[in-house]
Image (cartoon, rainbow, N blue to C red):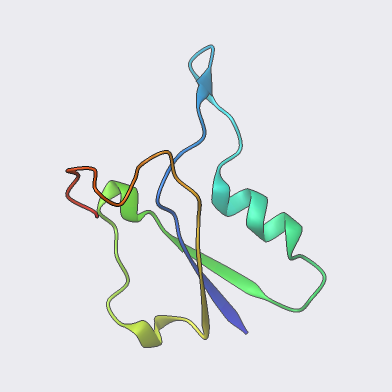
Length: 73
């Protein structure tokens, strides 16, 4: 089963190097259950073509809020 991860934020960076991202965190947390994963970084304006691009969806956390004036919201 393909799980689509809609990444709506990035973890904070330390010393210029990014820490693990939400997509890695969720894939590790759900490993061992037979899932495969594909990530779309919606925070960076990368969107799936269709709701049918994955069998199930997971939306990541984000520091951004519903009412923030950002193009991906």
